[in-house]
Amino acid sequence: MEFEKIRDIIVEQLGVDPEEVTMESSFIDDLGADSLDIVELIMALEEEFDVEIPDEDAEKIKTVGDVVEYLKNLEK
Amino acid sequence: MNRVVITGIGAITPIGNNIDDLWNSLINGKSGIDRISRFDVSSYPTKLAAEVKDFEPTDYIDKKEAKRMDRFTQFALASAKMALADSGLDLASEDLDRIGVVYGSGIGGIETLENQQNILRDKGPGRVSPFFVPMMIADMAAGLISITFGLKGHNETIVNACASSSNAIGDAFKVVERGDADVIVTGGSEAAITPLAIAGFCSMKAMSTNEDPKTACRPFDANRDGFIMGEGSATLVLESLDHALKRGAKIYCEIVGYGATADAYHITAPAPLGEGAARAMKLALKDAGIAPNDIDYINAHGTSTEYNDKYETMAIKNVFGEHAYKLKISSTKSMTGHMLGASGAVEAVATILAIKNGIVPPTINYETPDPECDLDYVPNKALKMDVSYALSNSFGFGGHNASLVFKKY
Image 1 (cartoon, chains in turn green, yellow):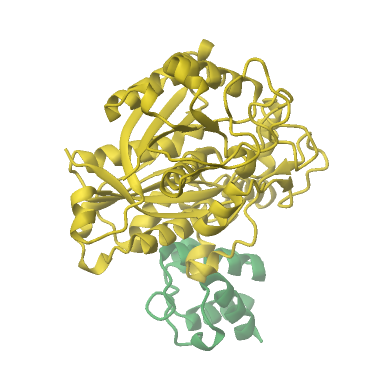
Image 2: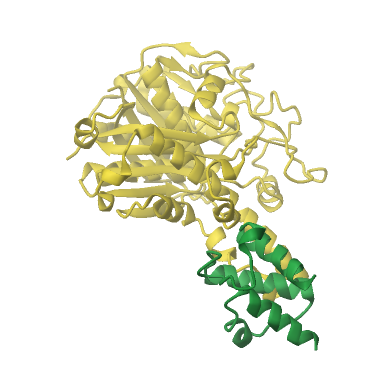
């Protein structure tokens, strides 16, 4: 459920196909994102999940799995 | 000094999203003006504009890239792609350090600016897009043309209001003429049919409040009451004659003269008697090394405002004397609307095709002669005639005047 929601946001923000998005996908190496894309993606995630992701945390997010993990931890 | 020729053209306009459609509309007097569809105009005194229709950015640009661009940049890239394809340049075998871009936009990404301002107001600074700045800045058309096609030479943007792209073409001409590049991709783009921009022009009382799309834009007509906003882009490939001949390129015509002046008078009103415009035309003729009598056709700035059309007519009489009554003048803005910073480029294309095809596009909606505008504006019907030399005028708020001279090749 959570993964699908996140995947849809990534697909929309980065203009990639849903099949390309796996837990292992690196935003920069696999999904063709640049630093500005990642900033925008983080904003979209903050908006969707009504959370604040501080810059120091955002900098550590490299893969789709990192995002899923991070949001899961916030819920706890 | 190099001779400079035009070897490729492309356009996205309210009357055609390619050169063939644009030209057919121009010579058949087809208008692109209609009720504004991009936002609700019920509270605006002006209801009309010449919008680009059926434009799909992804026909020209990767989906993700297109999303990171303002509409004006999408138009620019689309017309640049067309012009480069038309030129037949094989970029893989060219020295890309010798190919550059000189592009114009009057305003840049104002739609992006407005959208992001709304986000700032509604959601706070933390939600303003990281793409806001690169999407908005007016130089991004030149930047992205260079990035997309790998053009590593001379690169700059001209922001001179409605003269922007004529100044860009003139400057591009000079760069190639003096040998600083073999090829310059030049032109202009604008996408300012937005709530804020239209409101601003309405407040200036510069726009027509006529609600009939068929007749609202009527340059040089006694009943003209303001301009109609257009949008779109045109790109020209300027190339040194030597370089064009070496690769056996198709040549549309030659660019031989450029004159640029300032009114140094008022932020929006033209100088009395159109003297700044007259000086630009004189400089362009001098640069071309020709006499006023050599000009057969003028593609006028012809905005359909009371001031412009009157003062431009005075300026033409000042420069051309008796010949002013013999040469043909038309305003293709009567069909495209006023594409602001893109207008000079689209009108350069119209002028180039008039020379190449031996047909002068008309000024449509011309019905009632104005005693102060008493020249031959090629009313309503295109005219078949041989055009050896033609001049294209653009004037911008701030008092910028640019005139270009094209010659049959």
